[in-house]
Length: 306
Image 1 (cartoon, rainbow, N blue to C red):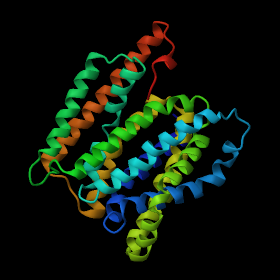
Image 2 (image 1 turned 60 degrees about the vertical axis):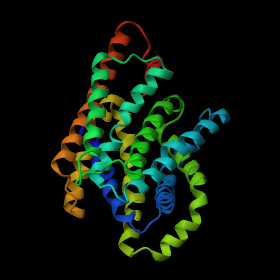
Image 3 (image 1 turned 30 degrees about the horizontal axis):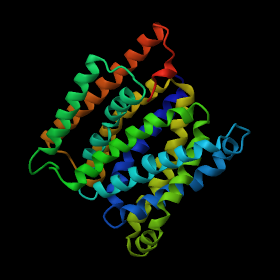
Image 4 (image 1 turned 90 degrees about the vertical axis):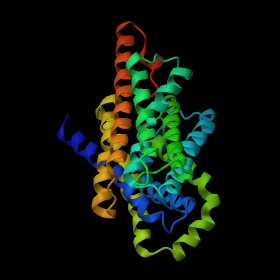
C-alpha cells in the first residue's frame, strides 16, 4: 500500500468515525430531517465541482437505472441519516457506531438470499456472536441503552447500510464511484426536501455550535470522506479497504470520550467489542468463500455483494 492510499484510508476512518460525535452534538437542537438535509446538501454542493468530470463524462448512462438510484438514495442516504440522527438523540456516539457496524451481517444475509452466496460455517458463528454482542449492549442495565425506539432506529441504520452495500454493486460495475456518489446525493436531497421547513426552523433556533457541527458533517465526513474513500477503492481491493471500516467504533468511542465526555461502561463496551468481532468474522469468512469460488472457476461477480 502506498503512502497516499494509506493517508486516504486514515482520513476516511477519522472523519467517518467523528461523524457519530458531530451528529450527537447537533441532534439536540436539529431535527432528524433538517440535519440530514443540510448535511447532504453541503456535501453535494462541495463535491459537485470535483465530480463534474465524472458526471458529464461520456458514459453509457442507463435511464432504467434511475429507479434503483432513487431507491438506494432513499434507503442508503435519506433513511440512514434520518434514523441515525433520531437515534443519537439518546444513544452515545460510541454505541451508535458499534450498532451501525453490524451492517456486514445484514449484507451477508441479503447476499445469501438474493445472490445465492454461500454462508460458511464461521459466517454463521459470526452472526451468532454479533447477535450476542448487540443483546449485551441492549441489556447492559442502567448504564446501557435498553430496548428503546432510539435503539431500534440505530439498528435500522445498519439494515439501511447493509441493503445499500448489496444492491449498489450492479451500479458500481457501470459507473465511476464519484459519478454514482453524486447521483445518489442529489437524489437523496430530493427525498429530503419535505424537511425543508424543519431545516429553516432549525437554522433560526439552533445554537451556533450545533450549526457548525452540521457544517463539519457536510464538509468532512460527507464531502472529504467520500472523496478519500473513492480514492482508496480505486487503489485497493474492496475487501482490504472495507476492513478498515471496523476501526470506526474505536475512533467514535475515543472522540466521544474526549469531546463529549461519553465513555461507555464496561458491559456496553464488551458487548460492542463482541458484536464487532462477529461482524469481522462474517466479513472474513465471506471473503474466503469468494476466493474459494474463484479458484473453483466461479466468476466473482456472480456472488459478490459487498
